[in-house]
Image 1 (cartoon, rainbow, N blue to C red):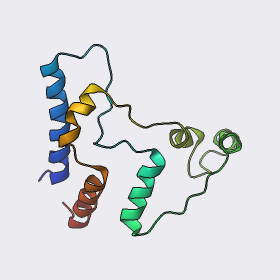
Image 2: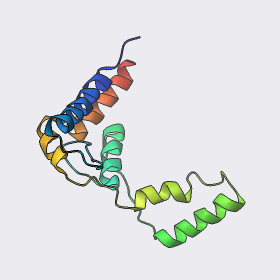
Image 3: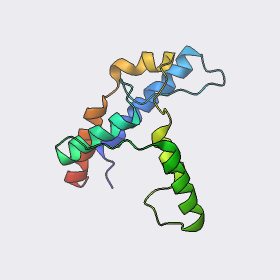
Image 4: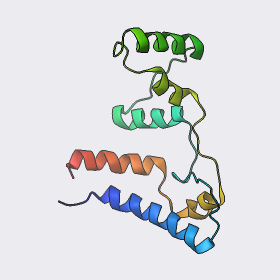
Length: 130
């Protein structure tokens, strides 16, 4: 079986980041956010995926967090599976999950593929069936 082109290219980005850690000898019980050359919010990420997939802008509705969390917690407990998502999944969309800049990200950033390029690659590979 052939490995998709995207997987090879993204593995190379990860390998470059790991190599930089070893060469710099700067790893001291840290974690690094290395996802791409730009930092985007979860909402912006979902907008870009939608734009690429549907070729139009997404309609967005912002709902108050606390009432939604209460409703989902209730349905999670008393009617599991009733809602299309649970409180824990919604929490990932509410919390600030953007990557924090760090020395490794700055070092690898010039060679990284931007989000739109990666999404186009994913779409092309899915369409090609590779």
